[in-house]
Amino acid sequence: MLQISGWQLRAPSNLTRFVALALLSVGLMLLDARGHHLQNIRAGLTVLFAPIQVVAAIPVHVGGAIIDFIRGDETLRAEAERLRAEQPILLARLQRFEAIEAENTHLRQLLGTSALVADKAVAAELLEVASEPTRRTIVIAKGAKDGLYVGQPVIDAYGIRGQVTEVGIYQSRAILITDPSHAIPVQVNRNGLLAIAFGTGDADTVAIRYLTASADIKEGDLLVSSGLGGGFPFGYPVAKVTKIVNDPNESFLDILATPVAQLSHSKEVLLIWPTKSVMPAEAKKPGETKKPVNTRKPLELKKPLDTKKPVVARPPAEAPKPAYSEPATPVTPVTPATPADGATP
Amino acid sequence: MTLGHNTRSRLIIAASFLVALVLTILPWPVWTEQFRPDWVALVLIYWCMALPTRVGVGTAWSAGLMLDVLYGSMLGENALAKSLIAYLTVRFHLQLRMFPRWQQAVVVLLLVAANNLLVLWIKHLAGQAPSTWSYLTPSIVSMLLWPWLFVILRDIRRHGNVS
Image: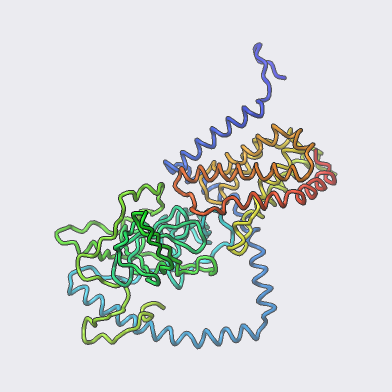
């Protein structure tokens, strides 16, 4: 027992320590969540603990190597063969896509709206680590040195996967569209109906909220990003509507959709740098000066209440505009009837 | 042995926490994710029960903070929850030691459930609460794992002469 000028100093009791550390935790959380003051500390700690993540990812790497070894040359050759056969088909589709894109740009110029420009995309590998049980996050093996930024869209070959929330030096973290804190503005591809897709925390479900019973939405509808909000570029597939429940006691429909991106299987993602996102709904409003589009605000909602004003889907002012080339009425005689998959490689 | 007894004990305890952290973020198929036991909580409860003078609230807080960094959650979230577990375990460690194994397992269930509910509550305040019930399954799996983990850690403690 220490004695300093008559005062007896004892080691703090268990309860005292707990209360002190609890207060410290609350302080940290407030600093982290409200002000984002701890970015540097977090980045430093992440680098410090990176070895734990690397060790955790080893079994998957080794497992993959073993599986490749067992499958042997035969299967690999077959796979290469299949990919080689697939490539010309994809390239042919891409050719048509480029022609359509050029035509689209031309038409947009005629209409006086800004053109959709192709986005820059870079493939990145995932660091195979599990996320917190209630959240859906991925760790990407690229960081600030590759030019990643917070709020950057993350996609894969099939659709939108999520967005970057934390950028370290060598690795970054992204939340998936199924994460409970994520929301993405979408529109129904069939008719341009605007909505918001919220993550649920479930691995393969997003929920579409605040749509009234009169909304024109059906099971099987494809939802594509609407580009509103400026975070995600316009026109990427997000989810397919799987279930619509109309409970007369509720003011809104209960709609569930399954993401089209392979959220839990693929080991690679594409990071895109949207060049200029065009907001079709905004561009159409007459008499409104266009504000700078690319504000790139991260969409992570701190509270679900941020969207308390129900985002009741307004039907577009003019004729609905599908994001995909599914022209029921050919716009120009030049356009050949293109199947929907023409634009989705 | 060149290392002092004190240092060796610390190293063994630290290593057990590191293994628990690796197991926590080890990737499994997605459908198994909701059954993932809370490894850090299990290891923490064992050490707090066996050596309350060495492992307590402070260790728990550090381990929880590491978990926060690895998960990318708000700093302090898991640190607070793990400190709660440590506080309760140290407070009742004498009773816990006397309990039969199955009764200890029930206490583990309650402790991990308290941990999960606290984390869920914090997440709710931050607007990240999931709309599923799966956050309670880890506590059940942790309970079922407890008897085996207890035996393993006790053997480590005896062979390593950790005290």
